Image (tube, rainbow, N blue to C red; front, side, top):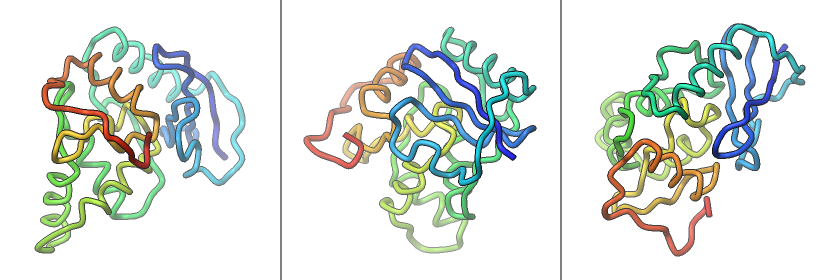
Length: 179
């Protein structure tokens, strides 16, 4: 059984989902792959402890504090590869950026391979079911392209500016899958 509730944020409505004890989803309104990882029916429940903790985490985040993903019980549904990418995402510090290529190098080491496709990493990043908390918005293209945010490039820019990330050299792609 999965449960859901809503949260109003400065970047729009957010839908939270949990398995009763752990957060399994956080999707921005209109997000690509919205609730795509939860196949079971979800029931509204605003009183779950994990929802209270998550809303407190989000309140602090949007107030400019720097909460970390490890403060919450997270259980994003996904295979081993995606889980590995999401673990790496959780290690990106507040306000810092990394690239798909850098994550691919880390995944190659984890998987005992010489190389790893940055595109494969991009797929895992794009299917992150717990936006903001698992900070996929902190990932940019090697050249500084802001492509690849399922919640929308405008929200990615807002979140990065909110975190006072160094936006020098970043640019909007002319075309891309997340535009």
